Length: 475
Ligand SMILES: [Zn+2]
Image (cartoon, rainbow, N blue to C red; front, side):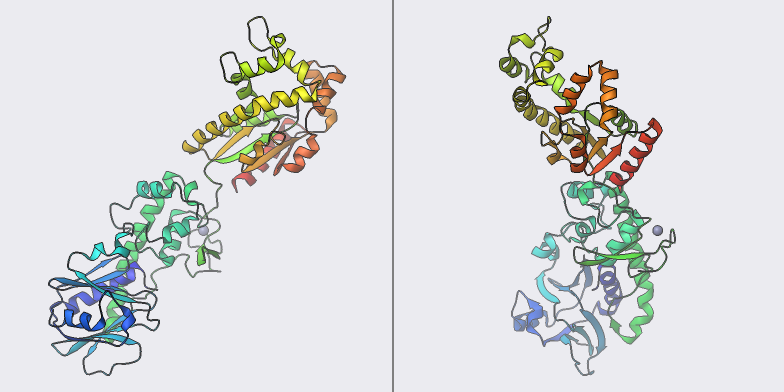
């Protein structure tokens, strides 16, 4: 299929050969190519007119006359041939423009998918199909800012996004592959997950790729036109497209082929690394004293925002905040300390002994904590965080895993959990066991979570476990 550079090459090749020629008559041998007018009216409108120039937008070619323009779309197989008028009309030459100087321009199309339509001169871009199209890569309107604005809500792979003519005009399959290679972006990356810097790289790469292809096409086609055939199909210097099994010109890794949105897609798996979405939400959980706060610190140290549901709950249950009145109403003023704030130890003593009381507190607290966490997550996404960590002790019990893209559970043997709890919190063995028993068993949390971090060993081992999980989250 001819793409923008090929159509531009056809325009550049044909224009000097056609300008000044006057149409004697037009023969249409395939009616369905002509749109908007009856073929006879189409031919009558063009008879006697002189070609003033050739224009192009996207993959549309314009033959501009004095007051009318012929808009031609070559679609899959359309080609133009310049031939002496006396040459016999051969198969697949569906429209023949005969000039007064005895020469002729033949439109050849084995698939008959191409279209021709007449519009008033100057109205070419007002054609419905063209008006809906996005800017061309060479246009100043096509920029990283433009792509980021359009791509911000697009949930499809960037490859499909860039093939959409309503986003970019004339960037076809070959050049999208080449653009993404230059920009070092994996073709399956979800468009809305790309950062502004990546959109900037894509915009620049698309401009360079198209510019290069147009100039290559211009030189390739010159020798070719002597046969009077202008198909426009040429192979520019392709780095990945159609290069399956060959070494990547940058790193030597074997170029692979996959299918994205039904289109054959070529890329270098090393240069174009798939990255996690912008704002991958990671739910972090683990039993009491399983070492969750140590892992929270590791996430923070690695530069990712972390919000602890316990901290959110503590804040929301302060006097004057949304949960305070409901909790006091449910458990009585006996849970209040001297300052009038909820005394966590007093409330804890009630709810850790009594499953029904615990259920009441959770029913009051979870919706407000969830809403606060979701709003914080949204803010982090808008800031462009790559990974967002929601640390929630009751992640699965509260159903908070439903807003997480991945879940990580800490694992440590119950014996260690118990020891830590007695030593750290000063609980008796009985109290520590009760606290552990009030939560979903750690084993079950680990089974439900998409990732596990083993925290039974040393600090160094924990760090290694963390790094390993982080790598899989980002891959
Ligand atoms: Zn490579």
